Image (cartoon, rainbow over the protein chains, first blue to last red):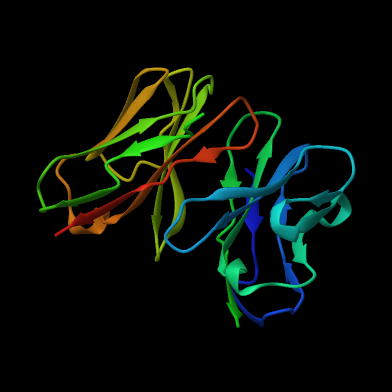
Length: 113
Length: 112
């Protein structure tokens, strides 16, 4: 069975700091990878996705993620965070054998103004 | 498209009462998912349907929970009887085949 690990449960940054959130998955086959964001009191929204092609994926609001197959990783990055990026971020993976989206435990990001 | 629609947005009920949560997926999507989110347990997949057929209900906590999808545009999640530990935000999501899931706004359930 596939699983997703997000090792950083809570991250606190000051505005303009750079962000990198870790995501590792366990599955040996072809995977599709996602990052979702959940702003306080809201539902999950898709931030970016990787299906194939260029392993560096650019999403909305200046976020990007890099798929490193050899490391089974899909880390999320942003060069300069803003207070409005305060949210919970979920990494998720699904495989081509089905449509079971497996979520990581989430990382709560707080950006101090 | 209006996106995934859930109702009600908030539900407060007393222990022992029946609760029914409703979801309308995005038109054309063939998968529908029910999730529960709590501070303690995070985001949990309860059940999902493909073409209105339940595929995996292993996440349903116990027999008090049931879900149906009578047609492609409607699904319900029922809790009977409800208990305080069922208090959570329940999300419905839909997707087209293996592509990304789109989440509804959620139903915040409080059982007193």
